[in-house]
Length: 373
Ligand SMILES: *Cc1c(COP(=O)(O)O)cnc(C)c1O
Image 1 (cartoon, rainbow, N blue to C red):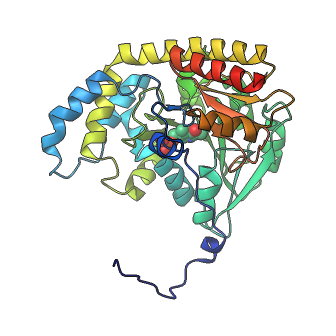
Image 2 (spheres, protein in one colour; image 1 turned 30 degrees about the horizontal axis):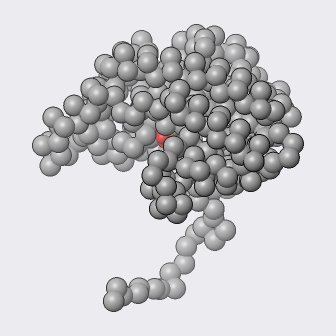
């Protein structure tokens, strides 16, 4: 018998009603639950093409090096800096963007004094990590069409606002404002506030140049950007993300960072993923084509489809079926999509990751069967 081990140890008050981030279901869970052979996962915005062949080859070759301590990710930070044409001093790598969100809150916000702002709904890691740091997280409701009320967000910032998090393209709606709109917004913030633009999905945009703030950062001392290798680079499982920050803030983040959070394999995989431009271009092409296809097909079936610049679309099912019922029917047939009732508090909406053409076709045909059953 495994032994039980309990104690009356107290945790911080913030932990008492703490709700953890809920990740999507895994393929194995659904295969077992419904005794299915084939399961398609369109729930976590992962790369539809899997892992780059160059990344896989590199990981096999580097397997023998794992007995060494990592170098802290500085090699991949240099390659990232080159990729964007910025100085390496401004790049901080982390164990997924999640680590960088946590770091930014911890190095900027004083618990009990400062506040952090975001929209409602927003990517759940921002409020979860702010709460864990004992920092107040304030939310401004999105417009009804899920566009950004940037003026309202600017008006909510005060002298104690340490950070604001804005995701663009947004999760879960896919809405994407212009870089110009965000630059004007940044100019209106109180002098102590720092805007973090989370560009996790920016490379899926039809026109990245018009939407990314990275090329403008030299003129934006109160703005930083988060990016990740989890989506278009196909490395969600290896945990690698980065922040582009003004030099002093980047230096503080590097000091506060856990020194080995980017492990040896993550660093090698990141460098290889940056090299494999054909894999990435193919990913972007398939995603953009699939986004047009899925949006059109689901509209034909009566769905409300929100315009998206990301690798997913947010939809509202037609009259006659609830989001929850459709979600469950799809699960039973081996297709996992994302319900938005927990975390985002949008029980009437669903989020669907763009898959390969076959996966997209399988989804639309299955939805059609369910609607006409
Ligand atoms: C997927 C996603 C990320 C990436 O997180 P990682 O920790 O790098 O995997 C960041 N922000 C948003 C809004 C996301 O949806």
